[in-house]
Length: 58
Image (tube, rainbow, N blue to C red; front, side, top):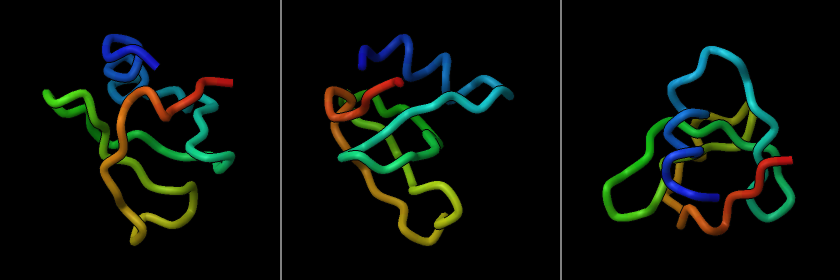
């Protein structure tokens, strides 16, 4: 996923269908270093930073 689209999704009040390694995730924040802070839907305690290119918009 490109950085601009990830920022749009993170800033949007509408939930987008984004996956990381086959799991639906919520993008909390996009970092300057081309990573994003995400967590699996319903599991906010499992936050992690991942490369933007590992995120897929369905």
